[in-house]
Length: 313
Image (cartoon, rainbow, N blue to C red):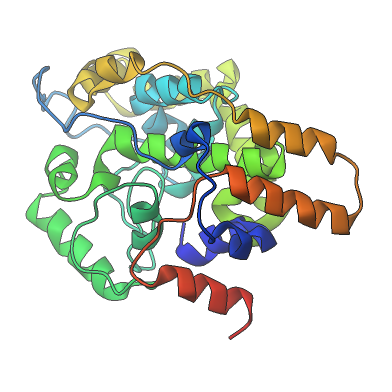
């Protein structure tokens, strides 16, 4: 995920979203980060699962095996934002194959279960490691991330001390806030998914839907289980338990107490009133919705960068 995708994800309403926020308190929930505890080891980390063999990461089975390790966190976040089951898991399968310490393969600063570029991470309240130029492709920051991960020996708890994108729950919650914002701005969960990578259009949405169907399928989960047990002298359920029991270390119990995020009633009313209207009316709708959604707090000169890109400069 990068800032250009994030900017384009706002559509032509980006430039309209930048002026001062109108002040509706209910809209702030989508951009403000909720209180999520730092990693704290309550259940001991174990080496019992070290050395296990998983299916090739680009395969359906490999993505499912890796992503299911984090299912208690994923399900809690989906429930909080009232998302369709498996939507967030599917995004994880697409973005990182379920590996939270695998940075963007282009080395341009993306990191996390869902890859956030530095400016987008900051916009959604995530602390990032190292300096950043503010560009959506920041290879210097990418090198800084790679060195940090090596120093941490690719330990997720260690990386999370330096960068919130490696904090499993903070990363997932920020992703769902982004998707919910896209939904409330454009009126559907499909639009919310597309918000992550707007230029990819329907292809991205269809890809996520395909992953979601596979993740939710008992047939594919059975395939993932059989594959794992053919590769390892260990039950797949036991392997998942070793990972899932540690989810309390990421603040899962406290997170569940936060409750659901209410829908933005004003944005929904505007969308309903303009359903099926012509393009000029739709443009007015975007202006109206921009006023009841949070302001774009990217900072570091990113606002002017977004404007220049939209204006073709």
